[in-house]
Figure 1: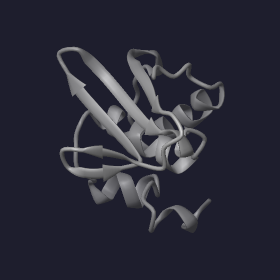
Figure 2: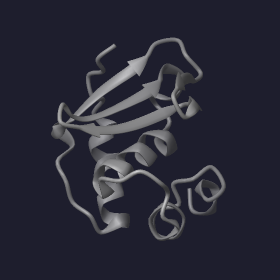
Figure 3: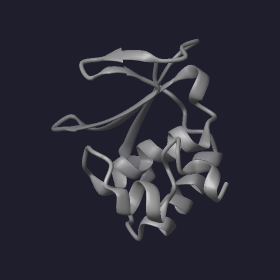
Length: 107
């Protein structure tokens, strides 16, 4: 289901740009939510959030239970800003602390 971007996402986007040193446009992302879901199946296994990039554009899908979770949303935003899969330690742990293990260290 298409998600209308909550106002707080703009602040989260700005914070993710700041910690990563990357810039981008939040409005270029198509947001989707899987209603009433704690997770959802993907070809890579069960996920709570997913960033995709194709000729069709940039999409982020969030499980409904995590649509208001700053860590999960910003984690996917960071993928969009970096325009890549994987979790380079420099960005996801050191700079932005956007992994389950690193989130509590500064938030």
